[in-house]
Image 1 (cartoon, rainbow, N blue to C red):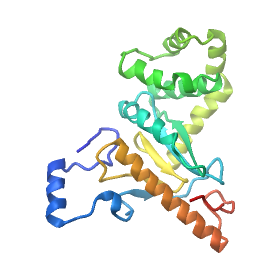
Image 2 (tube, rainbow, N blue to C red; image 1 turned 30 degrees about the vertical axis):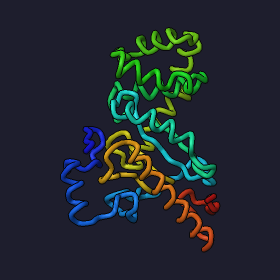
Image 3 (cartoon, rainbow, N blue to C red; image 1 turned 45 degrees about the vertical axis):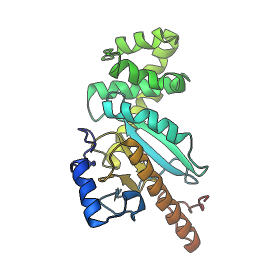
Amino acid sequence: MMRTRVSRWFVSLPLMWLGAVLLLLGAVPATAQQLTVGRDYVLVDPVQPTDDPSKIEVLEFFSYACPHCAELNPHLVRWAGKLPADVTLRRVPVGFGNPFYQLMAKLYYTLEAVGELERLDAAVFKAIHEQGLKLIDDKSIIQWATSQGIDEKKFTAAYNSFGVVSKAKRGDQLAQAARIRGVPALVVDGRYLVTGQDVKNFPDLLALTDRVVAKARADRNTAAGTGKSGGSGAPVAAGKK
């Protein structure tokens, strides 16, 4: 059974014990069960607005500094490449008031600003968690970025820009509003924080997220049929099947 220090939502019951219990009780697999509040997700209260009300938005709260986020990342990339047209993924680096995490949030938004995020996103995780590089201050971050072929003046200007600093602060505000206490964390449609107390690994967590997305889609369709509005305050568009 998978356990992490960052995510407190994975169960602590050993895998072989869980298997024995399921066998004895004739329980159905978690993927066949109905979603349950408290076990599979918790409600985000108040509901948070999303960037695009026409899409079901999945927010990943993460940090380059987090080893579990590094482990999740390749799974998340593959998962994101298969999302249906009515679902979008938005990643939010968080600082949690930790200087190292705050630097990593600035690094993320700087790479985004200079158009290098797609190329170097995985490389940041690798540099920190596999190569052991100490990206612990502005100087070391800028040196690493230039070693990856980014123009130093261009990177430094973006790194210190108002836009990057503001986005990093906004990420922390989003995490606080959604009551995020650890990373990685996934929030669906501004309404559901995926907890996954029964999941064993990150692929299972993403499979559960798919089910929570399906619930959000069904909720939107129901709201559209009754003329109610969604979490963004605007009428909800019916999701695609």
